[in-house]
Structures are given as C-alpha cells and as structure tokens.
Image (tube, rainbow, N blue to C red; front, side, top):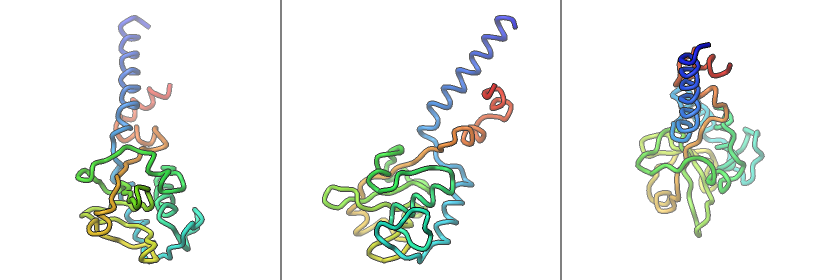
Length: 175
C-alpha cells in the first residue's frame, strides 16, 4: 500500500474511534427501541407491585426490577436497585427528557423510586402507593420529589454504530 492510502485508512480509523468514544455518551435511544420500551411497559400496566420483586419475574415488579426488565428488552443492562441505576448513565435536564429516560425520585435526600419517561410529562412505574404498574404525571408529589433523570447507552456498541455509520464503514472497522 502506498503512503496516501495508509494515511486515509488511519484517518478513517481515527474518525470511527472518535465517533464511538464521543457519540455513545450523548446519543439517545433509537426509534425502534423507544417503541419497544413503550409497548412492553403498556403490556404490564396493572401488574402487581411487590417490594423486592425478583428480576425476571413478570407476575410482579418493584420500581427498579420493572426498569431492569424493560431495558433488558433493548439489550441495555441496568443495576438492580434504583440507587444503583441512578449512578449509571448520562444525566439529563428535566426539560430535555426523551422517551425511555429514567426519572429518579428522592425522599429524605435518598433515591427511593424510579420510573421511565413516556412523553407528555408522564412516566410509567411500578408504584408502591398504587400497588401496581401505572402511568403518572410528573406533577404534585412526583414533581416535588424529583431528583434527576438519566439516559443510558447501548451495551452493544456495534448495534448502535450500525445506525449511524454506513455498512461498509462497519465492515472496515471490524477488519
């Protein structure tokens, strides 16, 4: 190979590496995965709330096991508890929420609850007060106890890369 071709290949590799390292921090979920999250959460409306519900069990959920279940459907692994989930991901301002972002709530300065934003100032969650999976508005009690929101990246970077880089570039990247 001549020097020009090698330099072009090195530049292309550098671009893809920079793209992967920077873009996964700020990108949101793709449209299909947002739809999957909405459809899956809708299927479970009314499912019984049980504190400490076992992850993987779809007969009952607590708030964090419900988020864990939903996100596994789109190949994103979350920690088990709401406190641990709140430590991961990229912080998002309340006015920048997108479908699929997780919203965390505090009582006594401690994260105690999590739900998933579904648009139009609403979120879905397994509610201890409502004793079931339900949709609530981000107002009143929830607005007053809002702590932060987080957005998560894909565990499978190749899945994410395929959506933003032409296929030939992915084939090149794998070489």
